[in-house]
Length: 316
Image (spheres, rainbow, N blue to C red):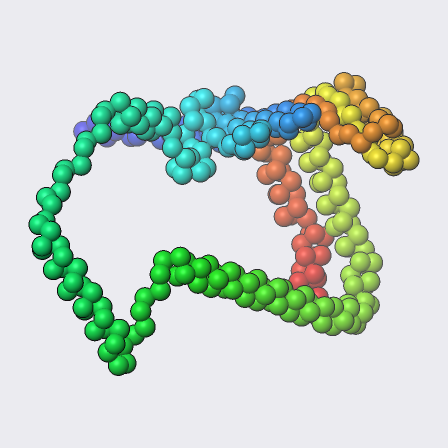
């Protein structure tokens, strides 16, 4: 009996340890397997953008594409498309083929001749027409009766006029509502400025506190740490640009040359002082491990200066 109980405990322990190992393996993969991204963009006569983000060696990936045909987003698992936003509104390839085959069958099949209507005797037709005309005359001459129906073209013109008038009234109402909202926003500006001036001393005190200064420095360090971890590891391409005014092109090139030391080796800027142009090609890729975000979040959460600054900000 004891042997059976120990065997049951042994099996249960093996199962629990196996489940714990699987959970730890998945957690480690989630935190330490990097999320990669890759972006390729090209602009000449047409603009083409292709971006891919993947995890677990692209077992799970998101693809984005923008070209002359529009934009497309696809979620793939093991390379198989499983989700595409807006795909339910677009007919798939199979449905398109079926519709095309139906159209071809309809075009190939001879049209059926409409069944010949049985012609009534001339006397019956004349009697029916006479009765209809008599009824119409009676209705027209009856006192208090409604006016005769307007003919088709006149009725269409009236509906068109009503539609144009309704659209004009709707546009005027929209413009009036927009002007009213802008006017209300402008009326609130003096009150906002007055409230800021009244709270000027509090804001200056909030900014000059030593704890808040340390909190800002800690946040800036975390931002720099995240930037170093998420920045692209490989960049290449070129940008050919120019403005109508050559002086503006020179100013932009001068501002860009200040950051020339930070440019990667395979990236090039080509100014054009003779014409207005913007074209080029760029490719970059990088990666990010999710433990970096978790680490940053924990350090911000346990930083007493940041929590104190947040509490003081809510009290303002």
